[in-house]
Image 1 (spheres, rainbow, N blue to C red):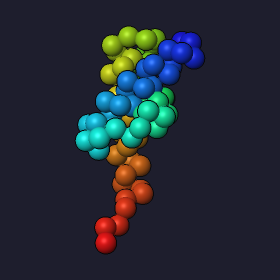
Image 2: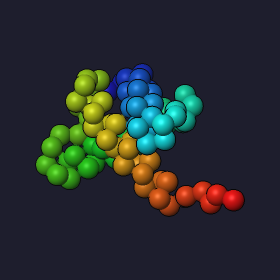
Image 3: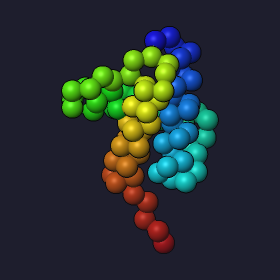
Length: 85
């Protein structure tokens, strides 16, 4: 997959994942990073369970990346939970 395709997939997946978990986006730069990390995490998780990971710029890869972004965000928030005063 090309660099541009990773950025597009990352932006869309990161935005959707952050909307599901946080109810608000993280900002365009963080959404791209979150989506790319989500695609890596999702691809690893899917391969761990015997399915294909990210296969290109398509709907299946978007679903894999969104699931990975959600898992990454949930783990991130569980580790770095902000204390409310």
